[in-house]
Length: 353
Image 1 (cartoon, rainbow, N blue to C red):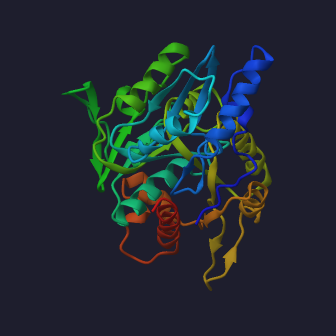
Image 2 (cartoon, helix red, strand yellow):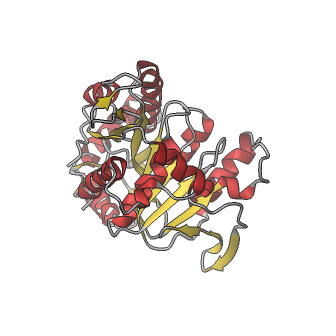
């Protein structure tokens, strides 16, 4: 079971805007303390610490908040209304539900810097979860390097738009039993994605809210590397219940990952686990050779008080699989890399059972 008591989780002050006067400040704290009594049963933590409550505001005698949830968590709205009802000063509580229809659990896959194998990890993790019998979607939101279609052998394919009762929606593609959508599918091949400001924000929000995913157990969002506007927009606009952070063993990578972790702290999303990629090379006699040093992932996991989900060894077949559109996690052989991805997928699935 993953540990969700990370010291980097959102503080109560971060879910509320700055109070205008002492009365509002007192009421905000009163509301926060009540909300912390609402426990998400699978993650066994309160909805405030899990970052599910955002944009809390007290206006006169009314409470306004956004509740970011999965499709199986609608019962939390009634629990919140019930626990806030005894407040004598509150005339009404307004709860805006923020969810992706039919998607149970949304996870962000992140890294502090490029080149650590984040997208490759996201693809193989999605495949491993699908092999475990789960319904999985993969959103390639890396606006600077959307490579997931190539990694899954999709190539340059036109995205269809369909009519639904909720309006027009993008229809995701499918590969290896995974539903896939990528910003790269909207751009010309080999052309830079020079999107900025409002255009970038609109495209990101469209891909979060206007894709017809159908029933999913997990939606993995492959974030761009770093901690800029695109990353913050994606996390704030989607019901991400946690982040999985990918790093490599060397200290310079760990330093960049810390910045990414603090970004999640600021927006109120807990880090659920660390994946250390390129951890070691398996020698001819089965020995582990730490090409890029060792201990970085374990150090970061200890700092965060969060699990080190797995250490992925260096293997040329990982690169070959990505280039040819055949992820290594789909292999029938019991390769060490394959087994690590299956182990990571099992740990994640166990957390949300």
